[in-house]
Image 1 (cartoon, rainbow, N blue to C red):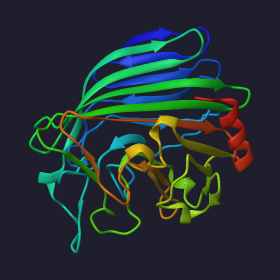
Image 2: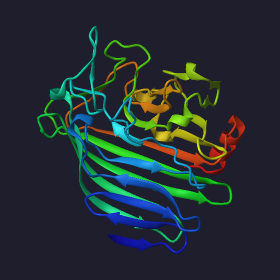
Image 3: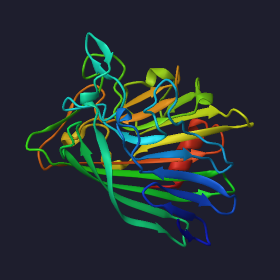
Length: 315
């Protein structure tokens, strides 16, 4: 175990070949664990963040729930990728439903860390290199991933996570990013960055700048907020998922439009989908870059509170 103490804010512990854990020392709360140890092949092994925790110590992610064992906190996924499943579990086949097809289940593999740095200003950076593989083990893509922690505010009970991914196609043919919806199942466009919330967050409040409720599914907006009430302790939490400006969710200038996948029944789940309604085609040698912010707040925020926070904390 290698440890590095940041006397201003963050304490980092790296258990090699397993995980990086980040603690806020004033409260002793573990903000996150980034787990990169491979897990079960059927679950499409890939690194993930779990737990994610509020500054009051309440966990706001789930891990291997009995309804979907491959749901693990916050992770980058690819439910339909050129005929392969880098999501985990059963694969959706139009007209037949979800089938157990292990020959379609691939993986995302940790290669190495280029940086794990906690700074005196209370920020943290984890920079990682990964590879993406179909079930055969061939190399399909490289990824450069960065996880950042910033704006840790113990007084206000808020902190921010930034997730950046740059995925380069290493095949000699295009990579086709899709989802169950692009393959025929309505309102199931999950793929890309995916959050699974705790069971207590079922029936939580869903908001965007101009709408509220489950009908947000499949629509576009620069941010989406999900609020839920904890089991075991009094209080609520809100997670705000936001596109970086360069993600261009509007689809202008040839960028692929991103649409929100969100459910609060029977599970709590959010994904700024890469391919909700239409496939995203990544040509050989091309790089797909996406950046997202996740704000974790120790209260049930209303729309105006969310807008104020985002305005006061620019990218």
